[in-house]
Amino acid sequence: RWLCLDLRTKEGADVLRRFIPQMDVLAHNMRIDAIERLGFGYKDVAAINPKIVYCVATGFDQDDIRSEARAFAAFLADAPRAYGLDPGKITLLGHSNGASFAAATLLLDPQAVRRAILLRPIDVLETPPEADLSGTEVLIVSGTQDVWRDRTARLADQLGAHGASVTHRAIAAGHAPVPEDARIARDWLATLG
Image 1 (tube, rainbow, N blue to C red):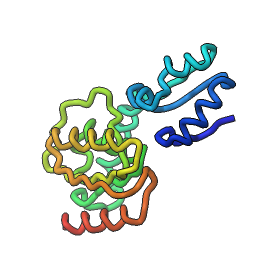
Image 2 (image 1 turned 90 degrees about the horizontal axis):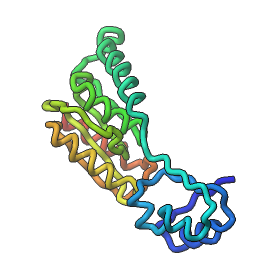
Image 3 (image 1 turned 180 degrees about the horizontal axis):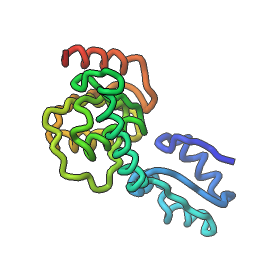
């Protein structure tokens, strides 16, 4: 069985504390510092249930990201010829993992595409390469209630530091897409021509 709780709320944290003594395994995908701030780091949980198996799965397979990004960049390089597209107007659009992958592709192959709309992305490259993103336009839309908002802001800073022109909009939303995302993306695209 599994259970999804919002540990930022007293109610969610209380429910988890009640279950921990009976649990065999606790698995989560939060960064260590974040889960510890919530009071559910390994030491906190083991103090309640010393026999618990504590699993953390926070990373992205770096070799897989790089391999897939190379394949995607090759597709993008051939797309204008194969589909009659204007290379200057190709815009990547992604949400969550798709947006994070698009951002990784920008960093790993800066010539692949020059425009991207990234909805709720995070920084997934542990060691981003030195990349010149000059001339690349990026719209990032984050949610102010998204648990990943700090990593989204970090990605926006990272892309900007590599020379991309980044427009970062934070809206009253969580991680899920909302209708306002489409309006913001449409308005942003209109400014690019």
